[in-house]
Each structure stands twice: as C-alpha cells, then as structure tokens.
Image 1 (cartoon, helix red, strand yellow):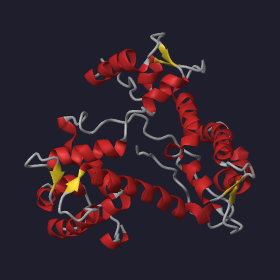
Image 2 (cartoon, helix red, strand yellow; image 1 turned 180 degrees about the vertical axis):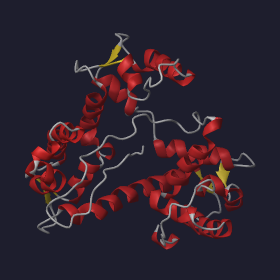
Image 3 (cartoon, rainbow, N blue to C red; image 1 turned 90 degrees about the horizontal axis):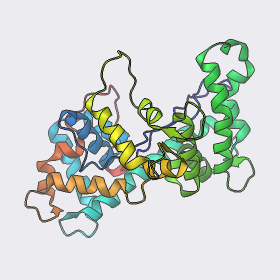
Length: 320
C-alpha cells in the first residue's frame, strides 16, 4: 500500500507553519500479478522499482548508469539471500520488501520529527502538532475567508485531532515515536484501522448519509469533465462495485464493506509483489531466482524507465 500515500510536512523555521493537514492515500490495493495493463508499462516498472528499493533509494538508482545499477543491485541481492544458498525465494523477497516498507515509514517520521517536537522533549504533543500544522490558519483566520483553504483547514483540524487521540494509546495527548508513527501512517497499525476506514468513508460520502453509493464510488476516481461517455475502465469499476464492493446488495457500502475493500484480509502487498517479481524474472520456472536471473531483468527491479528527478542522492547499498 502504499501505501502508503504520505503526509507533506513543511520545514519549520518559526512557530508559523504552512504545512498541510494529513492527506488521504491510495485506496485500492491491486495484486500486481493480476493488474498490469499493457499501456501502463512505465507505471508498472516504477511500482516494482519503489516496492523493491523504497522511494528514496529508487531515486538514487534512477541516476546511475546501467552498469552502476547492476553492480549495486548485485550487492543488494547478496543481502536478500538470507540463507546464502545462491537462490532468492519468494519468502526472501517478501521479507526484503517488508523491510523496505518499514524503513521508509520510520525514516519518514524521523525526517519530520524535529519540525513538530518544538520543545525538544522527544514527544510531540497535540498542541505542538496543531501549532505546527494549523498555527498560521488559527492566528489569521481572516486571510482564509471564502477560500478553499478555509474549508480544508476547518474540516481537517478536528479530523487530525481525532486521529491523534486514537494514536495516543496512553491518553496523555503527547505522542512518542511509535504513537506519532501510527498517527502519520495509520494503515500500518492494527489499532488505527478503524480510523482509516472512517476517513475513507468521509472522503467519498459526499451526501453525508454514512454510506458510499455507486456514483460516489466512481466520483472518487473519475470526473465527467467533458460530458462524454465513460471509459471502459469506469464501466468495469461499476461492475466491481456491484459484484464485489456492495456485499449485501443494498446499493451502497457501509463501513464494514469499505474495510473489506481497502483492507482485504486475504491480501498481502509484499507477498503479491514478491510473487510478481519472481514470476517476471524466473527464466527456468523453478520458483526461485538466481542472481543472474535478477540481473538479467534488472530494469524490473531498479526501474530503467525512470527519469532524472534532479536530486543528487548519494545513499549507497550499505545504508539500505
């Protein structure tokens, strides 16, 4: 999942901050082995690329020559091979991808921690977060009159407070590292799942009836800007809603149906991506990968389709 889609935090030089409130993330998890449209090859490569390496490391690889990429990838493969038998199994790939995902989450929190821990007590109180994210809005509400930002901030502040209090397990209104991590990345924590479902419902439920009907479901992903016919993929999504989203066939999704949609119990992103990488690279079809097979399909792993992001990143494989 990306998952998880992430909080954009502004660097704070003063107490006045122009950060955005917490944002929603991608909703639907697609099994990469089953949903790889041919016309989206670049997106597919980039998906594998970031799942395997992590976003920051992926950008580093984007700026290397093919020879440099293969050399670094070779060293990473050695680290993935946990039992040092010369073969990479799906289980080893799954373990590596989960490690990459976890590292990204905690590195993301580390990057923004000092921006919010204003009194440097190694905790972030709700007041500190509120001041950092909404301070300018709260101090200067007149500047936001009749603006979309006014509506956004007014709506998101109580939503963030609700999420913060859910993450605050000991109820002291001060988040330690783990609590703040669950606040910024709720999809990664079991005790935050209800909040993820509720926020998804609130995002899509435009008529405020506490449910998501088919039109609201479609409107979340497609807008009739030109008034023309719906694309075929939208028609397919309507069928998905009827056949797989609306489980009790009452024409709408409730919270449990939304949970089943965005958090299917039988779906494991890392497992699916590992299976996909093995499927695409396993030349002799023995359900395992050799280093040669991985390097032979190196662009699947490091994203040869990617462009230069303009960043001079220098992280090497020893830091992975």
